[in-house]
Length: 194
Image (cartoon, rainbow, N blue to C red):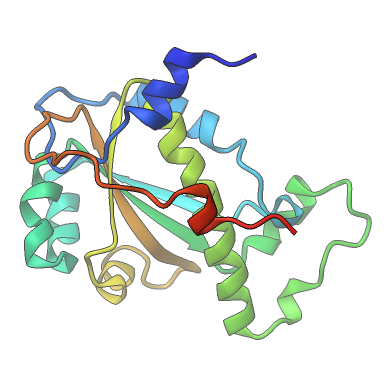
């Protein structure tokens, strides 16, 4: 059953926000957000996405060191910056996540580049659910890729199997600097039925 108001809130009237109000996002909201987003699909239920919720001034300073100059004020204005990351050894969780597979894929034997592709693709799929979940909770998002992944990885994930994908600023948008919605491609321009 369709819910027109929810469709508006999540999709047709939702916007990517550049700047945010001072209203905080609570730890309880972050946990609820994750509990919704974790229901996203992923190959073999591998769930490679990992999230670092950056809320402290010290954490924000680390993110800002990696930011492109045009994104500094945007990141600084958000109460939360989520680093959407992925675990390159996501397959270690198969015993918990994929008990339905008597013989899970032997991804540990794959080349690093193949594992990166699998983890990046599936964490991106899962991250779409993060934004939908956030909007369903009345939160606004500002996704961006204008930063240096290698700096984020060095400052947050050195010595781990986690790698950054992109970041999402999270909070309550203040409506500043939102342009009229730009066009999107029509069905016939972007789709085919074969």
